[in-house]
View 1: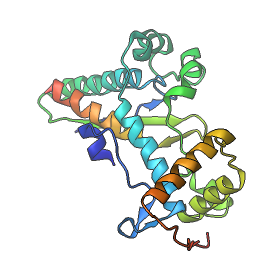
View 2: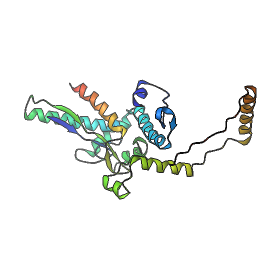
View 3: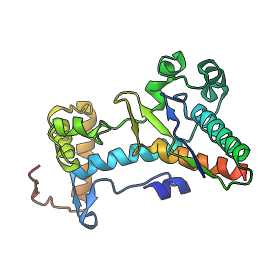
View 4: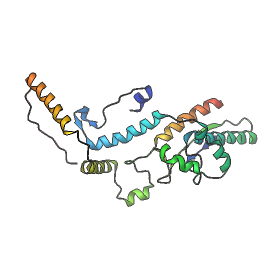
Length: 156
Length: 82
């Protein structure tokens, strides 16, 4: 993802695809989502203004000080720092105390959570109805017979 | 001698990346000056382990995108010194 993004691509696809794109894997999809977030962060670049250069703050803190208590830090920390839901940034002890879960396990847990809790906003009923009618009219026109769908569900 | 600074954005440097690069550059350049004052002509490496300090987990994260971004900028800064 990173190389085409840096070259200026404005659409990158393939997230969640495995086995030459013949299979879409939900766990792979949430992992790729994390990678995409990082790529977008990089492509966003570094904002350079008087406020972000923070020379006054640096002067105030001085050599040997720290920035943890600075208003400037508090003001920007929630927006400028990247975050990861899936990759564990805590020290190893925290990771092992929480069950030493590898990335696949964490990804599958996140998928299950999303499938159980995500409530997509439905299209308004008249819009859905109209779309259905358009599709059915087209199917009739082109004599398309609906295949019996055979769903393959992986055990997550 | 490798003059290596590890500015941690939000901890030992401003949380904004531009400000982090200000402190990083100042630290390395002053290190180079000190090195040259001590032994003129010593070969120096403009080094970096600069990254962010994730203020939620209080750890200096190495796998974050900011590390790559900062390293790329540090590379440019080093080039401008030479």
